[in-house]
Every structure is written in structure tokens, then in C-alpha cells.
Image 1 (cartoon, rainbow, N blue to C red):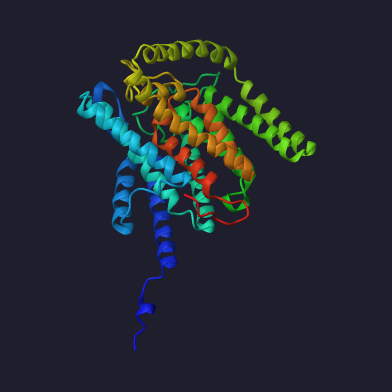
Image 2: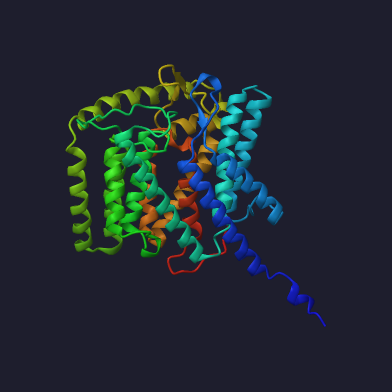
Length: 413
């Protein structure tokens, strides 16, 4: 007789198959997001564009619904509580601005952000039960970002790959080279990415490294310098210095502290060797204070409802008619506080605080270092609008919740 039970699909095998397929979706998304040319949309008179990644992540969400008959996560566990909470808030938020305020552009910006956040949260969640796959996922992520660094290096000589980005690309510190930008949206955006993966590569587990550690460090450092981005460089310097001190507090190893700060000192010397670095940083800092004050004044003059609920994406920014780009507060914290209010901003900060605490508790130094650089770089620009920084936010949160240093995976959500 045929054993019916033998023909049934083993739930564990099914979950493993889903995890492997999810990994393929992730790689497809990351390749397209990092390297594919953007889709121009030009709404509101801007030079705006969206990544083809939005198409991939949308198809993934549909595939997941069909495959698992589920879209949202359990709200009774940490991961699901924050992901669902932010997604539901953003859905209500963008529908309000569409149906009540009749601001279609706000709806488009916010629904795009929500799709990215939800899709990437689900992608990472579906690989949580396979530690080996998570290691492979991280290794692939570092590898693809190293390829992005290669495009940045090439663009220092050729100029931007795609003529859609904002900002300027001429050399700033006495270099007769373009600012490295590669296939990304801006030199500053690429700088933040290079800084994050530089510090991750310095402290990463060997299983995560696609090449020799020194080779990754050299490549990411070089392209970070070639971006000529003061915000990206300073974000790395601050993140690295603080992480080295935190490690010392945990391990009390003076030898390790000396080694780290020696490397830290060399990098600082290299960063500050550029002509005009300090002058440009000081002058630009004054301009950014004005941008921040402009947004805070708008937010402060709003009523209680808008203080709690927010003014809507891009409603605190104005259009630069020369670059056709948005001029934001140049500070993701200020921009998001004003645009999604205390409630939405509180959920985001909750995710970040939990990520920091759990990564510190697990001594997952590479990811904690990436988080620190990420947080410092958000202070200098509205990077959190973009798909890559949403990816990093979710990556840090996922590894904080699910990745166990002892090669076991928790069942919490």
C-alpha cells in the first residue's frame, strides 16, 4: 500500500525550500537595486526616479502571498510587532494624504517606501531558520556591495554611470577626479554604503567574507575616499572610534584597543590629508543648520494632529530648480520626525534602539559597527528615503533579532 504520510510534504523541508527561494529573490532584488538603471518618473517637476528594485520586491510580495497564504507577521513577537506596526501606520498615513488631503505625490512616495520596507522585512524573515543561509546571504551582500565599490572606482575617472542622480561630481579636495558614484544615486549615498561595509568587513566573521579581509578593507576604504564625501568619511570615523571603545569596555583588551585605534589613527590621517576638508565641513555645517531649522519651524507651527501624525513625505522639502532634486533637512531624523510624526518616528526609533541593545548583547560587532555608521550618516542627509538604506535598517534589525552568535537561531518573531 502507498503510505500517504510519506507523500506529504515535510513542513521543515517546505520551509527550507521557501528559504532557499527567498534567498534567490533577495539576490535578484539586490543586483537590480544596486546596478540597474532607474525608472524616471519626474513627478512634481523633479528629476525623480525609482529603482527597478520596486518591481522585484512587489513581485516577491505577491509570490509570498501565493506560496504561504500570508502577508503579515505575528504581532505578538518583537519582529512582527514593529514591522506590522510601521507598515499599518504608513498605509493609513499614505491613504489619508491621498483620500483626505488629495496629495497624490505624497501617496506615491509613501507607498513606495512601505512596499520596500514590508518586502525586505519579509525577505529577511523567511531566511531566519537557516543559519547557514543567513551566512550565505551576508556573504553575497558584501560581495555585491564590493562590486558596487568597483563601479564607484571606475566612475571616478568616467563620471556617473547614470545621469539621473543629484549633487555634483567634480573633485572637491584638490583631486582632478570625479567624485565616485558608480551606479548609485549620489556620491554621498555611495559614501555611506562604503563606510557601512568597510566597518562590517573589518569585524565580520570569516564565513561572511567573499575575499581576503585586507582586500575588502582596501577596496571599500579607497572608494570611500574617492567619493570625497565628508559625511560618509566622518560617519565611518565616528562609528569606528565608538565601536573600538565599546569593544574595550566588554573585553578590557588594551592590545586590541591599541591595534584598533592605531588603524583608526591612520584612517583619520588619510581622511584629513585632503585640502579644504575642514573648511568645507565647517562651512557646509552652517548651511545644514539652516535646513534643519527650516524643517523644525514648519513642524513646530503645525497643530497637534500633524505633530503626532506627520506632515507627509517631502512636505518639508523644497525643490532645487538647478538640480531638480529635493532639498531636505539634510538630516533623516528631523525629516522623518516632521513627515511621519511622533508616532511613526517612535516606531522607527524603537527598532533602532532594540537593534543596538541586542547586537551589543550578542557582541555581533560587525553589524553593530554597521548600525553605528548608519546612524551617524543619517544625521547628515535624508538617506532613509532610499531603498538601500531601508535594506540596511531591516538587515540590522533582522540580525539583532534572529542571528545567534552560537550558531543557533531563535524562534522569536
